Length: 140
Image (tube, rainbow, N blue to C red; front, side):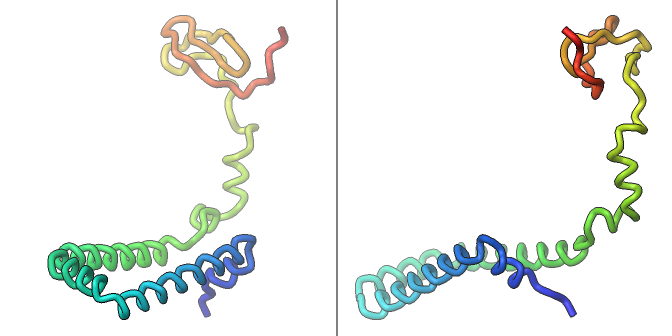
């Protein structure tokens, strides 16, 4: 059985805001409907707008439907989380550990020693490229 996100969203801190906004939108939609049914000027305006702009409205609705279907299919296909796609959690931990990183003391482009220029910044003496370092802060 597949769970939906709605129960988790209503349980979050944004749940009351979602309910209030939905109620406001429903209230405005009912007010607009009542205004349309009782106001002949609005009926004329809406009929004129729909008569002149129906191709654009049809294209817009079609594009919106296609976008929603494409996003739903994309979300279903890529719904796995990142650790599940990478395999196990240990592979992620291996990537995040700084112990497997080599100390940066030579320029990888010209094999010239790097000189420290500020905290965490190194510069090649020959090609003048800049590098970031995860070394401890320099003593002043």
